[in-house]
Length: 109
Length: 116
Image (tube, rainbow over all chains, first blue to last red; front, side, top):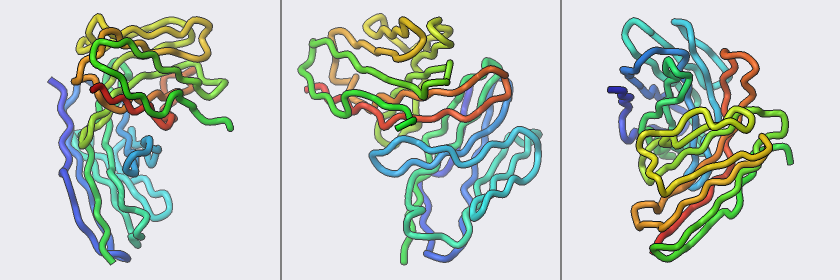
């Protein structure tokens, strides 16, 4: 079967750094995505990894290890507006996105 | 507005009624996806189109669900004989897939369905 695991909820402090982990087991691999979703809104694209290593984009970075079936999203200098759910999704051998349940990130002042 | 749009944004219906949702993708995008999302879960794939061709349907999609994209532009998703378990957010996304390595899906705001 196909499975994507990520923590259900995390709490962090404004200005701090938080790392959200994602592990996956899928039939094939054609890239891993991170999306942000605020409550009641649609997901918006954050990052894409297809090769091992770190991709940095401003305050957000995403890391991938294909041999370990593992990725993380790193958020720096946290702001209150970063309170949202963060969804990990893997594109499988059929080029379909398999989604995790999302990690709800709560930012406290 | 050049984003993905969906109509209606909210729909309340009684069990047993039929409902139809519409999605207008970004104009140059040839791929269109339908997802269902319930609270606390990630999006669940329902079906997708490349141009007007429906290329894949989820095995979880019952016969009560049907989708069309007649001219390769907008798409409709119909649910017949709605059940309370159909209550969810229905998301549409589009992407440009001239090459297999294109990646980003752009999501619409969703249609929230409540079946009473």
